[in-house]
Every structure is written in structure tokens, then in C-alpha cells.
Length: 329
Image (cartoon, rainbow, N blue to C red; front, side, top):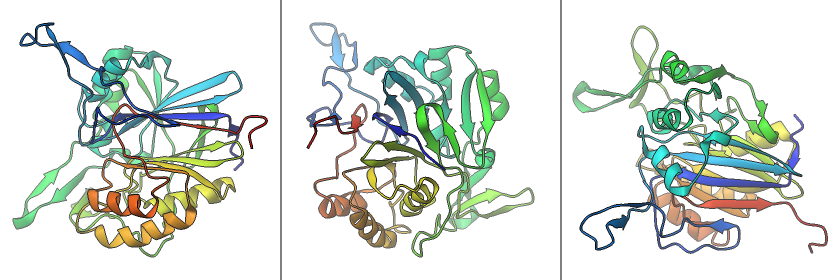
């Protein structure tokens, strides 16, 4: 698959687990203003407080690509709560009316919870929503003593009633502006084994271990002369698997940036941190922004291994990756 080169990609974190109002902007990394999110508060003399942005256990990213004078913007995931994405969009001054589509990385509730708020902001507009066919799978977490916590399951009918035009695609797809959605990701590494036995799916007759989360997919953009920008939701396929899959699909062997959730948190995934970090170190991305479900142990290990590339995630941050300009050294 030939992936068109773009002049620039901007990725804005709309929902993530962390918001830090004191982080400073650097070249290519624009932090949200400390003044974002003014709200009414009678206890202050001016009648308002600086509430900042909403952080929650979820993920959403606004992805804009620029080629010449043409630009396209997609929303990748929608966060966990019905209003978190909408609140942050309002406080950041993001006009969701300009969206050309939404893509879901997978069906877990912490990536698919914000459609209600998004629909309220946009109205019923027939916005295309691209998903994997397995996104509707019922899933649960098996707990001790035979208990199970069933996760909220997406309803296609409810989404369509809210005005979303649902498009199911299992294969790689080229979307607006040269953004590639990977489709199902090949699982080829020896160390990325997926979810532990507690993660289960309903197969029509009973609950079964669901290690693969087969609907997991990522976004890929090819920045001219610099390489691939990959945005993951949770990275359930394994971030190294995702990168290698993207490289096989596109024939581009340079990783420029990796942004999103890497799912390396908790005892089941800590053995995967070492080989994952080793593989990423060999790939030598210029920017790496682990967020959401990456976990603090993996964050510290990545920061130590890739100090010049690692950047702390925070809601409202925009990462800008541009092609070289004429005359650049």
C-alpha cells in the first residue's frame, strides 16, 4: 500500500489520564494554556476559577494532516465519560464541526464513552464512524470468587440514532487526507501475548478468554522525508507489532513518532516492558508520547532509555511534526 506523504501532522490529546497545567511548551510540543477552563466559582472575588482540563481513564486524540493548502481532521477515540471529550473541546476552543470522521481504536468503554457529548456539540450530521466489525463484542473482567465485571458494550443502533454513519472495516483503509487505519494487526513478536485470562469475551454460549482484542487498530501518517507517525489507543495488539505491521503495509521503515496508550501497566504486562523498550530503542523514534494505559513503570523505563524522544503526556497538548522545508539542513 502506497501511503501518501503529508507536509505536517498535528496530534492533540483530547482525553488522557493526566493533565498537568504547569508543563512548558517546547519546539513541536504546545501545552494547553494554564488559563484554559475558566468556570464560575463564587468563592473567588472575580467569580470564576481556573478549572483546567478534564483528565480521566480514557483516550482521545484529534489528528489533523496538512498537504499543501489542504487539511483533514479526524477524531481517534472519544474517551471514557459522556462529557469529558466535550468539556475539553469547549475549553480548548476546538470546533468539532470541522471533523471529517471518527475512528475507534477498539470497543473498550474507555475509548468509546464520549459519543454522547460529541453528538450534542455537533448535532445530527451523519459523521462517518469507522470501526472494526468486532467492536460490538461483549467483554468482561473476571474477578476473584467467580465474579465478573461486564464492561459497557457499544450499540450500533444507538450510535446511528445519534447521527453517526457507522462503517465497518476489517482491512487497512486509507481515510481523509492520507491517514491510514491499520485494520487488524498481525501478531508476530514473541513477547506481546495480549490480555491475561481475566479479560473475557462472550462467544454466544459462554465467557471465553479474549487475549487478542482483535478489533485493536491504530492510525498511521507518513510525514514527507521523516517517516511514520503512529497513534495508538491502547495498543492491545502490542505496540511493536503495530509498528512492524504499519511498516509492512507502507514500505516505510522509519518511525518518526509514537503517541498513545501502550498497555504496559500492571503485573501481567511488566515482563513485556523490557523487550518493548529494547525494540523501541532500536527503532529510535524522534518523539514518543506514552499515555493512558502505559503505566508508570513503563513510563520511567522509556524516559530513561529514550530521553531525547520521550515527552510527558498531558491533556490539551498538541504535537506538531512537519516535513523539512526547502533550505533546511
